[in-house]
Image 1 (cartoon, rainbow, N blue to C red):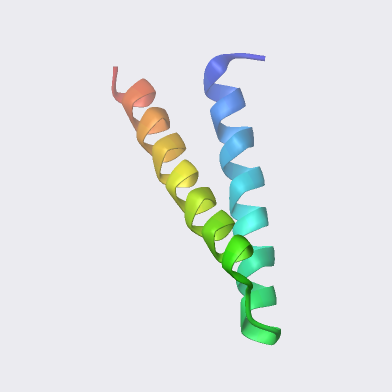
Image 2 (cartoon, rainbow, N blue to C red; image 1 turned 90 degrees about the vertical axis):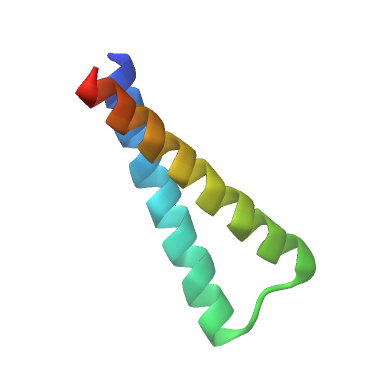
Length: 58
């Protein structure tokens, strides 16, 4: 698997996890630890998107 494919797959997994956490937040609310995990996951998604855009433009 190429690095670009790995980044795309990682992006898909992060988006799915973020969606699950947001749905849980809307239904029940998130605890402190889960809220922190959501923020870290969003940061990872942004970093992955940045890396993916850098690779496609290079």
